[in-house]
Image (tube, rainbow over all chains, first blue to last red; front, side, top):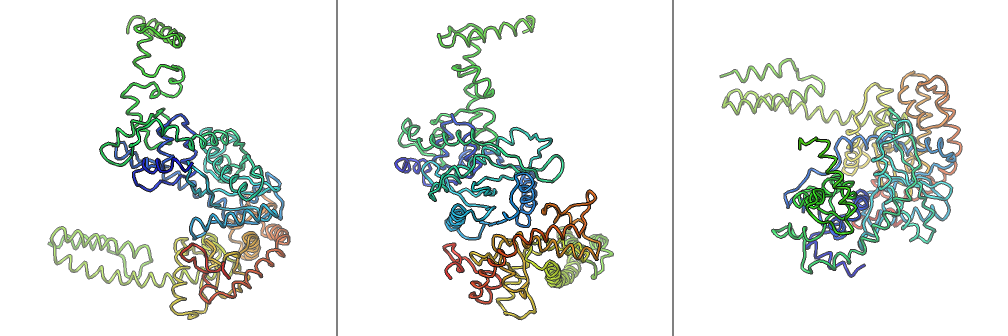
Length: 361
Length: 263
């Protein structure tokens, strides 16, 4: 995929590429249909800077309180060589008492060195099953032709010759139930690590299936601070992620449809340049994309149905704007054959609304 | 126009120069604010008097900070000797709080190691002991977040893959032994018991030191031999480092590769 690299560099207009982390990679899978996001991410454009330049900057990021709470819980579980985690794994998974090896791969050295150390220790673990917990492994994943380093706060955990990813999250699991949105986000992130770990294992000449698709989510139990471990199957997330990464590497298809001199330099032409690439805005974009407010403004200005939510857009498949939908409902426009069904539904809805309002409208 | 002066005096009133740390810092802050107010009001006489007072208070504050550092060092040493193994700042602070009735703030311990290294490099072996680093067994670099005492043998100060667990268990035994006499530290015992299956028998919410010792010793038997072997091997390699590196770990060079790895 090196042939698109010069084109992508040009899009950045000389700025250094922005590094991915698991959060941004996981966010890629949230809206796979958005060409704008796909292209900007593949090129490593600083979306935050772009949004700020366009006047749609957002105080973006996780809440400081959430970060503090997360760090405190993680420190507690990992304290004293992961003592609490070991006790938990023995209790839930029957981990052998002899399995207590703990290697902290976080080191003051450079990224390349740390990655090399991760490789060395994992290679030894794969060869003769040495070691149990590997904290802070530094992994690498190919994103659109450029290697991205991932620095997960997770632990790779070896059980019976297979590696599992342990992800520590601070949202509570009450009565075996957690908030589905947070679990889904955790699963998406864990899938990124599983994929990166699999690439590493394959690279070391072992079967990538030795990295399990089952990850362990460690969360506070009920209303206490006691950790509990829940197995989580991330196969669906893995499939989405892989498809999305493939799509990223086929970003040349998007590039082909664009003017050859397009660039996202922070100057007067930026707004026009960003608008050249089609977006697919939905309200949930605000949770994961720096450009969300720009796209929302654009979507509202042209009355795109997506601005009303993904459900509305899907229900009105083929009808792109609110104006067109209203025309169909009023019967002002003659619907083409493929929209006949949608048009009939819209007319029924309009009639029901008129009846319900009893002529008040 | 002495209103500003008397008002400021009222704020810092009743704080003698021999007050505890927090109060003294407060006094310095209050004086600084008073000086600012006096200057803003254009009251030069008051500003001059207050400035002199501020200087005196700040001098006392500096002295106190130095004495504090020596205190933190002695406290950390005491807690580490009780534990007998390398430990993180949190555990060191908690042990001191439980047995010596004074917590050590973790932030103070964090900077202690670096201060000790500077002191050692300036005048090697000028002190009877240093609070130093534990070394990673494979790279001989300082292990993240672990404190140790310089007088300990190298085998105790290098940490291999199993050492975090054996040290944790050893620390549990030592703390529980002390708790038998002192009847203190239930909080600390619960913390250890949470990480050692089978340690929390008996009544709910309490930990019997004897149970904790038995459980920790039983698990320690499983790992002790392998851990001792790993550590002895790493200690032999670490003996080749220079005096400062032996205590504070070998540094990374510019490529991010630690010096210790080449040996």
